[in-house]
Image 1 (tube, one colour):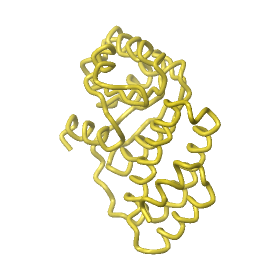
Image 2 (tube, one colour; image 1 turned 180 degrees about the vertical axis):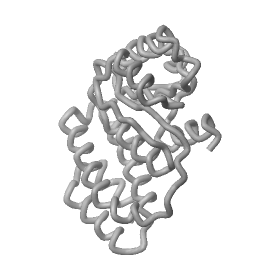
Image 3 (spheres, rainbow, N blue to C red; image 1 turned 60 degrees about the vertical axis):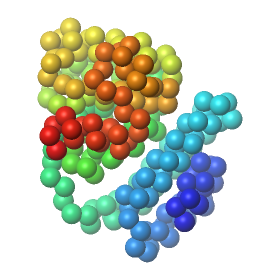
Length: 209
């Protein structure tokens, strides 16, 4: 059923996807495996967007499906053993970009893996990131972006954090549809996270979890 769920989400068959999730949660399926299926499906959605076969309406529908799937999973996730809190992470989609599907998956996976996460949302200015670091005191900052225009905004954000004297206090990861390690070098971030589980591993490595 796992592949069937991936395809239902990626093909924008909302009713089918939600029905499958309900069936899986009515059985003995692991909610974390369902989340992994959702991540795989969102990767496909992102690729189709890059290829020009999907557009903004499909991205919005995919995000809506993800939110509904998360709501279905919450009761099962609440039954999982309490996870030791490891540290704090600030995440946000950088200024000029309003895509939040990948960011939402990363935020959720960080949370269930023991991190207190402050999600700043989308179109977040460098100044807001700087303010959040000062107020929330995270060990890790995650900069998300889907569009190529986010490359320079990410660099501006990292530069602003450095100019505020906070760069040595945090590790910074970048991620999103168009991102890769070359972008990481351009921005001055510490690492590139290919997907949500990569982001979790980076954060755990950095805080010693």
